[in-house]
Length: 351
Image (cartoon, rainbow, N blue to C red; front, top):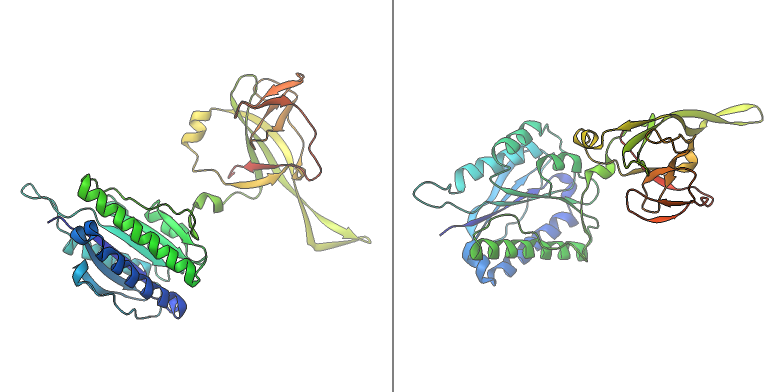
């Protein structure tokens, strides 16, 4: 029988003491109870629980559902993510049956990693080992319990990083129902289709969100760079502004605490869109308001008078003397109008 190994890699550091660890224990019991009445899961799913704090250890080896008993979770000092990952990888090597020329091995394991904090060790060697030897052999889902986990580190391991936004009893119950539904969906998939790609349940209606690290991407704060498109030629260009800081003065005295930052135009430059995209790592998802910008260039591609006109879609393009204009990004058509007080937000580049 081909097994579907489900690993739970759980942070049991000191910060998990109290309600979080209690909710995880209750959640594990509910998961097992629900899976035991599902015929697909009962036939394929084997469960293992590994915990990590300063060190890592197994609370339950891979065990078939009807024999599995949810453990009581201990608590330890430290958050050694690297130790937890290495223990997990060693166990996968030892416990998961590999496919050979003579027989089919186990299905690709699914790993649910729960953590609420920042690693206290150096996880990079373990992360490199995971990416090199295990990423293609296992499906990993990382869940930040609350807002304090280092999602940037988790994002190095997998694209499937989610955050449980609230850690109250209701949110935990809904979250563990989602975990259960995801395991059920995956067990049906391997049984009926033979496909062991990860099948996560929808996250609509629960306090769970997919983490997009680009939202918090580091940007060069000294420059504001905007990505525009020429209305006439459809070519792309960058508009560069440099930060200029000044200080608020009162009765002739400078207040060093009151800094006023503006960005002054440096220039506008045509760029090859394909090459630009090939060297760019995601958008910053950081905005700058037009009231913070000093200067408006002409279009470097066609010479139109205004190189920064903001469409309702949030992108910028150029406008010349024509009264009627068409946004080259979204196709919206209309006439140029004045911005209401307060300006408009534009997505800035990472610099």
